[in-house]
Image (cartoon, rainbow, N blue to C red; front, side, top):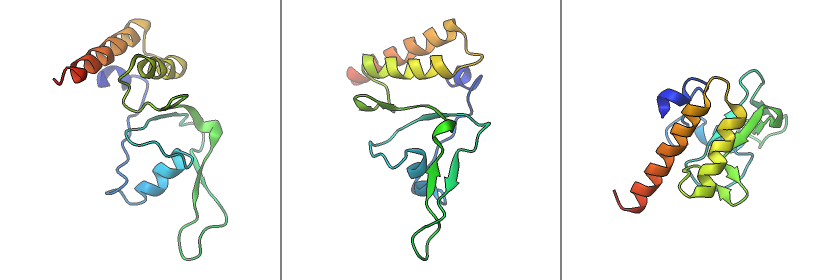
Length: 128
């Protein structure tokens, strides 16, 4: 699946505990929403993603703010975070995110991703 996704996306992982400013960046990207991990966002790299607020806590760096116009889609669905899309509605949300943001991924490749996710969800429910 990663081979297909990298045709259109740069996959970036943020480790909040081990990366300098990891919590600061992920908090800004999530716009302060809670919801657990994993979580994903599809972002427009041609636009600035984050900006610093001019007023921060005294003695610390200014807070980062997500620029909404750079956000194409996120794991935030109606039912909450679908960062690990296991249920059919969660997988449908992830597929919509791909469908609306892709450039080079074909319909056939998108169907393959959906099949792989369904297989993974089924295997996980069986304890495999």
